Length: 630
Image (cartoon, rainbow, N blue to C red; front, side, top):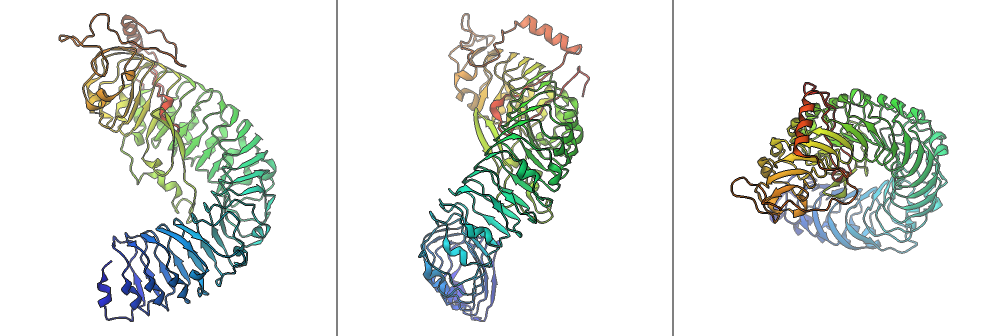
């Protein structure tokens, strides 16, 4: 910001609104000369440096908004002089240092104070009684602990309290539950103990996640209008029948109970939660089947049941949840085939993950109707036969995803008619490049298909190469045969490709050299032959990416003949096909040719993508019943 403001002659200026620009530099000391200023907004700019002490001269200032900048240094004590200040917002800056009672000395009219996302420490006496009476307070990421701030008890009008990630290691004081909160966020602390009852009538948003709370789930007030409840990542234990079936929750849109120690069967009383849009019960110890009443959640957008001990077939009633965008049933004991109704009824699905279950059968051609699907994970099951050519209909995988992808809209105000879901981001665990990663903020940019560790047979359909938006493709540990599609190089966004431990033969297509983003490749333990194509990426991989074939050229030590690019006699790639691989005996080229011939007359073609690329469980599989099936 320019210091030319000091030359302004109109000191009668009362309102200065400069939010959402590209302003940079520092706030000049001369700002203090605008003594009649009542409202100052600099939100969402690039302003740096300290807050000038001269700001204390703005004796008529009522609203000060500095959020979303790069302000640093400590808070000036002169802020405490602004006796008319009502709204003070300075979230998401780089402020640090100590804040004491002096900073609030004369802030008697302050009703909103939000400064989350800074590295500030509040240092006040244990018996401090603030001069203000706040309606909104958010000090997320400050240091307030280890004790629960006792001075909050004096804030009788407080409707919104945010003190997440503030180093509190204490029990929740009983007086907290007697306050009239609309929104309470005390997540990401080390708060411990049990909670028997949440009796606040007006509260709509409760975030107690990522603490050390234990015991049974708390009962809610019968008259509660709770909208969002996040109790995830604690140590709550026992069954959930009393909690789930004994509460009047007709307004609840978000219920997050994941990552606890909850057990028993999931109760069949979901008709009591008719407005639910997001449900996460993942990473617990639930057993039994998916209850049929879950199909009455017709507003459901996201369902996570990952990593439990659920069994049986996937209940048909889920076909009534036609608004589903995310369905994660991975790491359970589900049996049966992939239901055809998933493709017929769940047309809005963006993420489908059935990884690590006991499912069998084929990929139903109806699944190809999921044009919006961008993540498909069927890894580690017993799915067999061919991969259908209609996978080309996964159009969301055939385009480059960007930040305006619909995936972000699941949290837009329009979805919940103006109610935002603060603090909750859709997330998925993805196996990428052999490791598990959690994706949330960039989930909209991810397109993955993982069919690995199944029993798929047949050739890799050429139509797969039309899915140019994929960043990860894993078909390892199957029984796939034939050649690698010649146009594999058209999948220009691929960063990870795993075709290992199949029965593929022929040469590695030269077009693979065009995959400039490729940082993970494994084609080991197939029956590939010929020269490894030349590119910076391919020659940069470890030789283990190519062993167990009849390949030659760098990075292998086997030389190629000048005439034919064949390996010299006695120089077949060495490698130890160990681990939990398929244990497949490599079929000779004559037999493979015969299998291809049989396929022309109707043998199923199956494509399988390995589990090592998706914790976000991506499923992009279809069945082809002959060369004419589309």
